[in-house]
Amino acid sequence: MAAALSASQARDAWLQHLAHERRASPRTLEAYGFAAARYLAFLERHRGEPPSVADMAGVTPAEVRAWLAHLRSGDRPLSPRSLSQSLSAIRTFHRFLDRRLGAPNAAIALVRGPRVKPGAPRPVTEDQAAGLLAEPALDPDREGWEAARDEAVLTLLYGCGLRISEALGLKRSDAPLPETLRITGKGGKTRLVPVLPAVRAAVDGYLAEVPFVLDPDGPLFRARRGGALSPRHVQATVQVLRSRLGLPASATPHALRHSFATHLLGAGADLRSIQELLGHASLSTTQRYTEVDAAALLGAYNAAHPHA
Image (cartoon, rainbow, N blue to C red; front, side, top):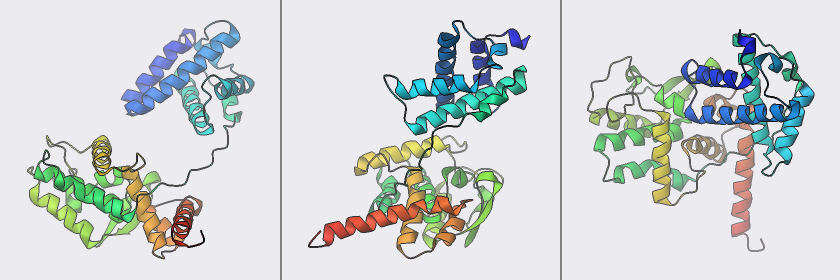
């Protein structure tokens, strides 16, 4: 019976479920597995024996809060954001125990995580964005079509404010890009994004050089061997580019999306329009960009004013 399994065995089954059925990334699997291991180790110390699956149904909110307090006060205390992520992992584990192993625990939903204040986005400057977009073509070790591809992807992130998944979700039939692109983002929400001539030209340049015959319903952007380009490749590419340009670690692919919003705001665009362009469900998410713009304005004032 499932209830006779140890909680550690259930953890292994859960991670297999995440890897093979939910297609979770290796990074997610590592983080969730580590959080669950610490959770089960705490319960074993607290109860005096390794918990079984049946025992997990009886874990109380007080025990979960005690575990969070332990993480917050240990030799390497976790930040509120890390505590919140750990609690999210444990809730996912308990949902698996309920739905797959018949060990429901409704009490876990009563535990609230720490309040996490969203951090302000960290965009790159206009000059830094231009450098990231131009740098792929200067790499002597990369084939011309690959450089054109990387430039096209990064130009989509910065010129249209797309997420990596949205840019890589484009199909061959989407190009040549129209003046307005219909994008389906998080939660299946659809939005219309204007396409600048520079973005269209970058994608056309890639199509002119790509060595593969692209199926109309297949992915637009291809890897070196012809398969679909992965988000990890884009992230690794930007990591190399920012190192060559001397940019900080915050210069990530997603930072180009942040820069799209911040630079529009600085040029006078209103928040509601930026919300629509980014596909944010809530205006409060978009309002974080006002903090960035205000910080940049204050920085310019302090640098330029004679009495600053």
